[in-house]
Amino acid sequence: MHPWLVMNEPIFEAQGLKHGLHQEFTPRLINYLKTWMIEVIDLIIDKKHLIKENGVGGSSFTFPLKFSELISLIDSPGKILDIGSSNGLSLKFIVINSEYKLEPFGIDFDATKIRNAKEIIFPKFKGNFKKFLYRNGEDLPFNAKFKYIMLAALFFNEKNYNKLWQSLEKGGKLIFYTYQDQDTSKKEINLRKMNFKRKCCYGGAYLYFKTK
Image (cartoon, rainbow, N blue to C red):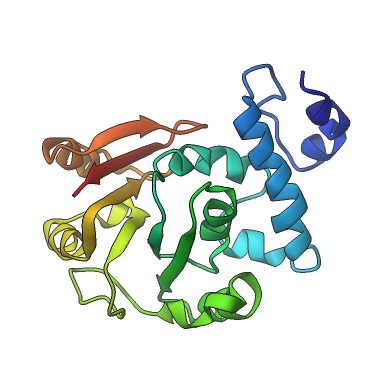
């Protein structure tokens, strides 16, 4: 086991990470976990409610394991939009761990979560986060083209796909992600039919992505 994991094993166990501190953890993933502990947890150390608010669940350490594969899809700098961004915590993890410079944008229907994104998680980019309900191909509230757009597979439909595809710059990626506790099997079948590639994430979730 990596020495850093041994040193922090009691913390991981206290956070409910039962999936194992095992040899499969790559140096890259270990670095993600370090960053999560040092930069993100420190940022919200007295605001732990932000973890639950973001939909991460009971363990603040299982979250970076699930999102680590998404970072491997980032292959150039640019604007990244998270649809259903909550308070921006997921996006924060991606931005600080990517080797490329990313400008974060986010939309969510919950005004409180967007306020937390503006005031706590991304104060330098507060103009890039907006309260907005995106369901059925609505025009996005930004005058911009994006290098990356990410959202839950639950919201996949033809109107959303067409609008988001138009909002990508050439060479950009449209990324849908699944949750283990949501049945999106029919959506996933349609994504495969539309030539989206699939990538497995830690814990059994999937990423579906396509390059323009």
